[in-house]
Amino acid sequence: MYVSHCCFPLQQSFWQLQRILDTQPECPRHVTDIVLLVDSSGSIVPEDFGKMKRFLAEIMKRFRSTNTQFALMQYSNKYELHFDFMEYRRSHDPDHLVWTIEQLHGTTYTATAIQKVVRELFTSGKGARDEVTKVLIVITDGEKSGDPLSYSDVIPEAERAGIIRYAIGVGEAFSSDTAQQELQEIASEPTNEHVFRVDNFDTLQSIQSQLQEKIFTCKGPPDAMNMSLGFSLAAQGSQFL
Image (cartoon, rainbow, N blue to C red; front, side):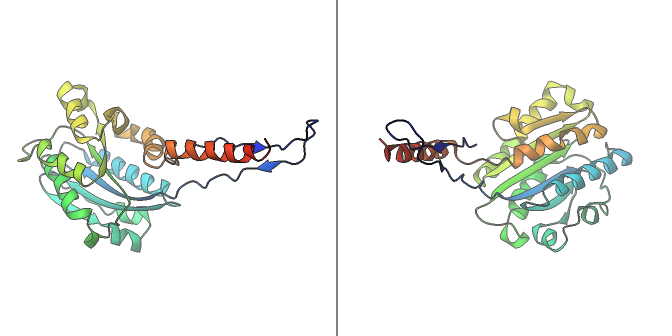
């Protein structure tokens, strides 16, 4: 965030001598690696699975003009990596990357799927980059079921890896307190900034802009920016005191 300003050196009679424009700092270039982790369990009907794929493609398209890489894995009690970061660099066409995905069916091993992403996808061997913002977006239609791991087994590992996690819960299953709690366990803190709930797969489209803004907000470190602005004003003003 930036407050633009100018300096106006004045004569003793307060006539303006000149106008000095401040140079606005450039918005920092964000470099982001995003993994899309998609629930593919049997509770999702094929029509809704198609709507979720459309949502994924649209999210990817929103980041086309940015320095962002994507990878995508679907899960049930099985796991399938559809493309990693290296494959994404070779083909930037979201429709081509997403529409060939076929639903796995089965139960819902969300915790184990998160562990696989942390250990197997955010790696240099899969094209992940060092010193970038790492984001995981988990989309699920219900609580995990039959998973041998709990979130306490895997979330600390994601935290240590510096992965920012967004949890998107779709459907009536997330009207219960326990299901809502599960989304909060998945998501980064503060959870109110990292959890999304939608009523059905049709309304997934309604959160596209909000999700994009949260992931890719153009802002620098507020304290550093304010300090820089203060010094700039002080330095320019002191020339004419």
